[in-house]
Image (cartoon, rainbow, N blue to C red; front, side, top):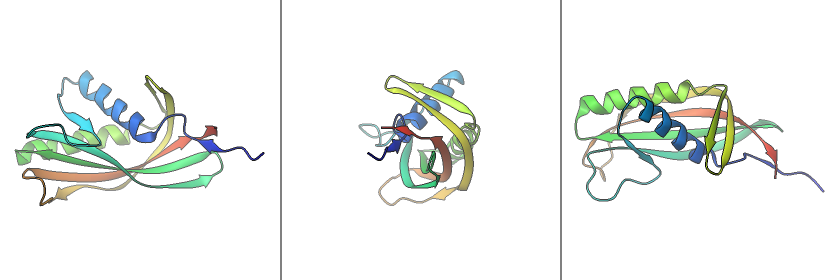
Length: 139
C-alpha cells in the first residue's frame, strides 16, 4: 500500500490559531476566521487557502490569502501590516490547536499587503498572500 502524506491539521486552522494567539499577546481584538463575523462588523480578517503545491514528498507549500477590513483606512493598514508581519515570522514555529499541531518550516511572501476593493464589503480593505511550507505525515 502506498502511504498518503498530509498535514496533521488543516493549515487554515493552524494559521487562525497562530494569529489569534499572537493578537491576544498584543491585546489586539480582531476577528480572524474564514467567514465574516455575524451582524455588521466594523473590523475583521478573513483567511482562505488559494493553492497548494508539493516541492518534495515531505513538504507542502500552502498559499494563504488574508483579507483585512475595517471602517477606518488607517486601521486597515495597521492591521494588515501586523498580520503580514506575524505570518512572515512563523518560520520554524510549532502551532498547537485542540486538534493537534503543525510545524511551519518556511514562509515566503507572495504579494502585498495592498489595497483591496470589495463591492460586497462597505469597509476599507487590504490583502496579502504568503506561502507556508509545512511538514507532511502519513495518514
